[in-house]
Image 1 (cartoon, one colour):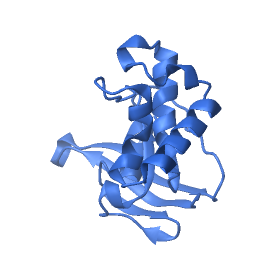
Image 2 (cartoon, helix red, strand yellow):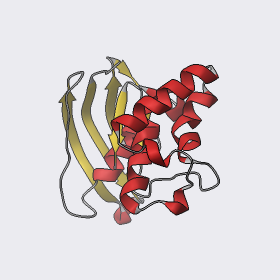
Image 3 (cartoon, rainbow, N blue to C red):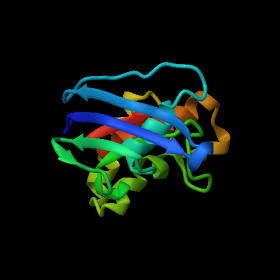
Image 4 (cartoon, rainbow, N blue to C red):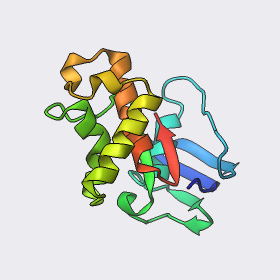
Length: 163
């Protein structure tokens, strides 16, 4: 269920007065449903800040952000229907791979049979079916990354953000 993303005049500044640092300077981006957008740039240029604003983890200083045509500025992250994969993977260390992938589905009260089916579909897609009973500490970095992607894919959100 992909949605459009429209970023209009987004600014983000940190600090106050003469110590203000403007990180994002009037960003305008339009992404149609189903399209991919890749942001490339040096460390510290604002890529993660923009993703955090889209996800609702930070508020813009100025501008509008629309998902599926609806403004989401000021809308809580949980209400945006976005899945975000962080650089650090953010996996639950005490859970198995299967439990990590299915966690968001469990929180949304998806019935167990449907949850197991979706976990298996995503694991097969990412070629990690043989890892479903392992814990994150037993995985390589690449395997952990695929589990984090699997957790996002299992949800079928409006937007995927990968940092």
